[in-house]
Image 1 (cartoon, helix red, strand yellow):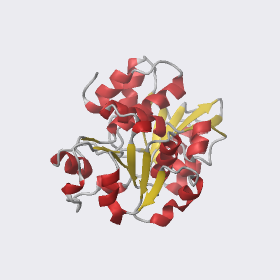
Image 2 (cartoon, rainbow, N blue to C red):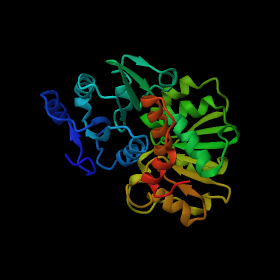
Image 3 (tube, rainbow, N blue to C red):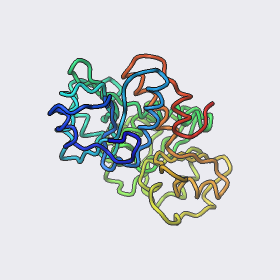
Image 4 (cartoon, rainbow, N blue to C red):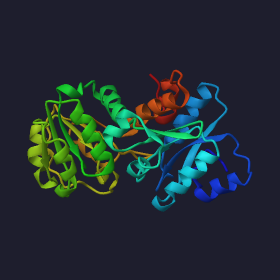
Length: 299
């Protein structure tokens, strides 16, 4: 298989490897459904090359029904580790032998380390988000008024827990279906800075926030957003956790067209991927090489 192609490996491919096929150095992967769009392989392969490590990282298409089988195959094949993306971060949490304390607190994992056959689950998304926001805007989250859109989904709930632990000035959690945030409401009842909203209240949410983070699928949809540009203020900053392999997301485009600095999720991918690399290899992360591969710029 051409490891540079957009075609992903499958669980059937892993089962063939168990039968004795040559892995060609394939020892790291990102598991998702869909996964063909993932930019993790070029970024992680650049890091491996920069460190002179003889391994390859590729995409692995895994349906929810196949996830447990995929974990079993990867363990038997002696994979160094793997990443999890949509929709596997919560389900994967239940398939590892041990959880890092942060992953346990966030209720989801995005990184697995295979340590002598024992699977350890980590979550690098929270620190990746924090580093990306500082990278993009120089913001200190503890001093921010944050609106998190899509707080009812898996990624959104983990992000909400991470952000709430930082005790920002305000944290406005927004979801289209408010009932999906009931668990968070119970967990965060003692945090007076956290409030809960639905999408019909976006105008007020924007008035009360200075940093807008999107963890919903809004950034992947085509077509114009039916939001009023008058909701935006010059001091707003917008961070879309999702990204497209080519071009800006509609949410980033909408913000920039209305004078608001905005970036997509590639910066979060960069920083969470760097933390994952550190977990796998325990050595300095070649961040500049990863940034160059991901965004075509190094700094």
